[in-house]
Image 1 (cartoon, rainbow, N blue to C red):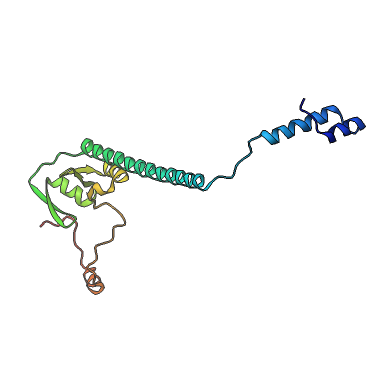
Image 2: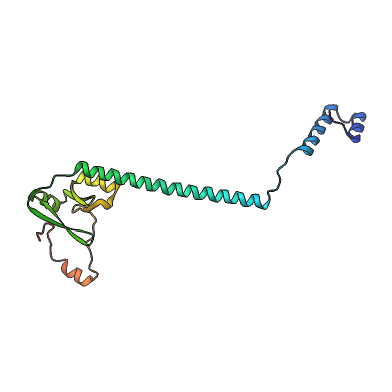
Length: 184
C-alpha cells in the first residue's frame, strides 16, 4: 500500500473512512501523478496530421479516378468484343455513304443491307479504323458500354434533325420529305 498522507491517517484513526477507501484514493493519486494524460498537440504535430489527412483525401480521389478510368476501359473493350463477335459480313456492289463526324464515309453493302440500314434494323459501328455492320440488338449492347462507337443508327428514337441555325429555312424545308435511303 502506498504511504498515506497525514490527513488520511487522521480520518482512518477517527473511523470516518475505511482502510480500503484510503487505499483506493492512494491508487488513484498514484495513477494521476504517473498517468500519461493527453498532451496538447504541438504546432508541428497538428501540421503533420493535417498533411496526412490531405494526402489520404488526395489518394482516395486518385484511386476513384483510376477506378473510373479502368471501368471505362473495360466497357470499351467489351464493346469492341461485341462488335468483333457480332459483325455481319459485308458484300455487294452498292455504296452506302454516311457521315462520320465531318467526313463522309462509304461502305459497300448489298441491297438487303441497304434497306435494313435505312429502316434502322442494322447499325454502323466503328471497329478500329474500319466500320462494321451490327444487328440492332448487338448495337444496343455496344451503346450501353461505349456509345461513341456507334456511327450511324437510323432506328435511334429521339434524334433531333440537325439545324442549320436558320429557323425560317428549317420551317420551310420541313414540308419536304427526304427519304433515309436516298442514293447519292
